[in-house]
Length: 238
View 1: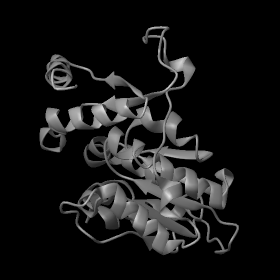
View 2: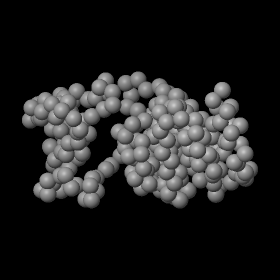
View 3: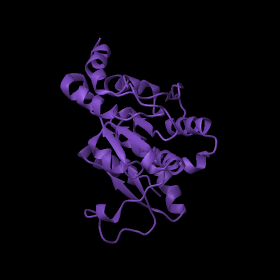
């Protein structure tokens, strides 16, 4: 199989290591940009507990590298399409990620995304323990599952510390008008799968509540569909 081939090709590169508390932790996050950004609170809590120098993060999208480096010194960017279609790229990637010995790997995200992990890191030779939740999300918000999973693994990290809170860095506001409000919430209306997009009336309810609390909103979008969706939503805001 492909995994067995990887093992044979890569085994010559690895030197046995001793497992110990000084070994770092690998956090694997599979999903698109929005899936990872929502886990910023969890990453901050884990970075605070273990230390930024003792954490490495694996993400799928190159655009997330800078974000992940806020919480870890070592960031691996794996591309599922390249890993599945280019064996040489895949083995180079696996060689790099296996050059260190990790005391544990924490997988954040929907168990259905583990098919992606098969391409990127399932044959991780230097991880002692792999931790992940096995509950398939129903109506429950996936982030809640992740936060409860981390709280079960590390009871000293309360869920309220893992709630994502973001602010656009000033350096990234070149395309935003200079009169940006001092209190604002960023809303990204897009989704890779239309089935995962909030309805316009649901967004309108959220915006009305934010306005009641004194927050303005900054909207992010990238195509005519997003623009039309924004117009539909705003038309329902009180």
